[in-house]
Image 1 (tube, rainbow, N blue to C red):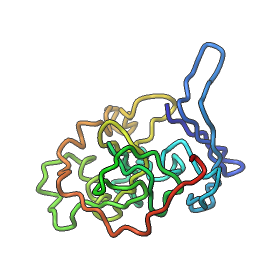
Image 2: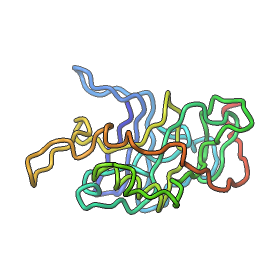
Image 3: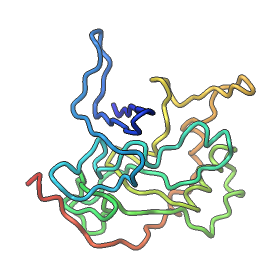
Length: 203
């Protein structure tokens, strides 16, 4: 139920958690405002949470339709993983909702990348999968939330699924989950971590 609404006139994005459309309108558990002219990194405070566990705006790291059409993603992605570290996070996260007490658990805010020695062209990925793999090599991804498995965030336009239609060819499925099945997850590397931080306002 993650949803972001962008006001193009003011430059603000409004993020919502557990958003649901009902017969009377929209309901949501919480809402957060982000200035899109800023870097999206929040100072740790009583309000530095967000729709994602790490406090990142939903626009951050989002794979967008136009990026797949143009053939490259010029920024880092955001991932959710199962069982990130509980109780601590690292910059640029400003909060956490981890659930692992294991000392080797990856904290939210950590940056990972696809091993640069991997030959992406040899992975047998289709065009879309190759674009995502290159972005993971060039820019990496930040751990931004917990989930029941590894997740990468993709723009879902106008409440539709990410099976985007290619208006140039009339074909569907510019991106789908099957495109990413060949990513070698065992080749993901955790980059050097900064100081472990805490979010004391939920104690």
